[in-house]
Image 1 (cartoon, rainbow, N blue to C red):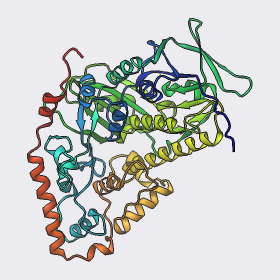
Image 2 (tube, one colour; image 1 turned 90 degrees about the horizontal axis):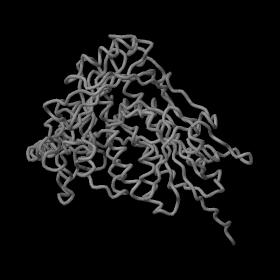
Image 3 (cartoon, rainbow, N blue to C red; image 1 turned 45 degrees about the vertical axis):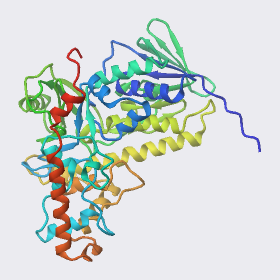
Image 4 (cartoon, rainbow, N blue to C red; image 1 turned 120 degrees about the vertical axis):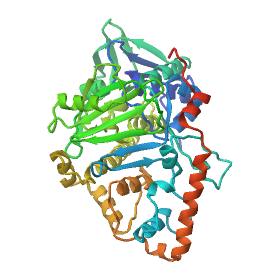
Length: 507
């Protein structure tokens, strides 16, 4: 049987720079090995959002594919280590817990570690969940050591980390990487988009100076403007603000604190929450809020009141509507980053969604035929990922016990998507957490938020009762004490940065 010939693409045009554009350019330059012409069109006159400074551990895979040296990357981006996210005031005012990366405990028998912990906690014989996680205890002690894979039976092999970095410096770093591998940057503001009459595909973009940039495949990294995917192709947007009502963010950097914390912090306020992202040269801060419950002036005042140091710039406002494009891939345009949708950065997923969109594009990389089946599957997978991350973020808002504002009461009383309600019901019954089809957040992530925000199961897995109490208690105590000893030998986060990846003072 003869296969249909492949009509290979020749020209790839990326519209927009910033984190999304230059991540896309760098990845395609590496993977495509110079066999396609890749051009990135951006204008120095158009700014970028630049608040996506915290990541999750999957970014290490991106760095590995690009063969990026971790310490060099951190030096060039004023980076620090991230072991998790601390949540303050999310259950009740005064509550504090952490969503730490990595595993909990060690395997014992046929049920997960947390089921034995549920059983012992109900009997009053377990410590708080954090004490069975090396990431959470290292965060508490402000320590860090890279995982030691040669120590297979030690918690030191289980350390999982991500990064905080300056998004503008990251884009600059990736631009150098991409241009050194053949990507051409075209400076200019796009004033028109021309379509092919035969199929409605984008044929070219026209710049203000009259330059026309033609392509076969266009990647829309134009941010909220969504110049190609929405303004040109009118793809449509699915608004999720009925579940996630915040619609504004005020962002401002401030002076660095004396202590370089190896975690992001999210502090819930009266009508939203504040992020704190520690970098080597500054702290990134922002207040995400609902404008129907608090004014912009009040939100700005709340943010400035809770900074660690003096602000380093004027606060700026970002307006958004949480949701996603109805199709991330429409005709010959693929939306990457904010052009494809927006989920507030509560769990630091913005850069990850860029990364997975790029990986998905490589998996379903087209020829000139643009097979409908490939595009449909790309869009199906994109939707699944967005919806499951959406549900995880909704969980934080919904599981609150706050009565200090109508905002929190509304979030607690709202009906949530059915897949999320099913997860809550399963956990409430016997502490079970089920991961759907390899969704982004694993069981330990759901466990930490549910426990951290005071959702207690009514019982535990029946098979957790097959081992007697004393053996289970001894098992938990051994896990805790071993983690405690491991954390004691880890260097301080500041010392690790100083010794391995301190930024050059001129950056």
